[in-house]
Length: 285
Image (tube, rainbow, N blue to C red; front, side, top):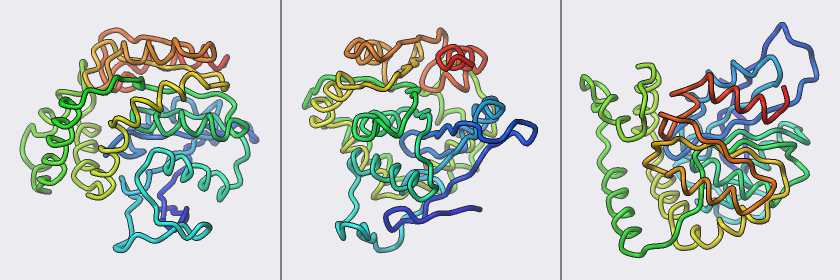
């Protein structure tokens, strides 16, 4: 499996390409959400491989991008790496530089879409166009946030590995994320990724992606977007409700909003035909 060192951490990455297609295609980079991995983007990448060379990678501390036993500092700054969304945006910059990719398309989901939004404003010259799936802005509510962090901490702390072997556990695990059913191998992959996610990364990103700071920063980030962006929402998304996405898109005339009916937090898997149609129309392919 291919790995590349980015800011002191070995990052897993893979290419999805169509051997029959022409060379020198543009590159589309896929970014996953919290406690996930690049695995759930594979079917989407394969569907777009005739038009793009698709780069999938696991973010630091998730999937196959394991953290070292003792977190190493960034070799360029000698600063300890943290779990702020801005830090993950710098990871992406490091990945592009390491692979010598100057300008790409971004396709990011959920927490990955928050990271991508920050990247778009910090390094707009590196992105042609972006697709953000299941992203948005929210208002800070102290009691609700504290309850969320407490529950999230409990869920992350108690993750017995044997859970994946319990019949129908994957269905129960994914029930809150889906409106329509998806393939069993994908449900199992989601559960495996969650169970294997690094504790520090999983906990750290809970507190940074859903926080008072994020509620203040993300509306400003969306308002500043200059890169043409498509924001796709699932009608019944319980994790990031569609109205949060609609509001985020309204903050910049560079952002188009699209709602996919009868889907929830994974519209690209629940209704791939509609999702791909929207993406192709946005990209003009």
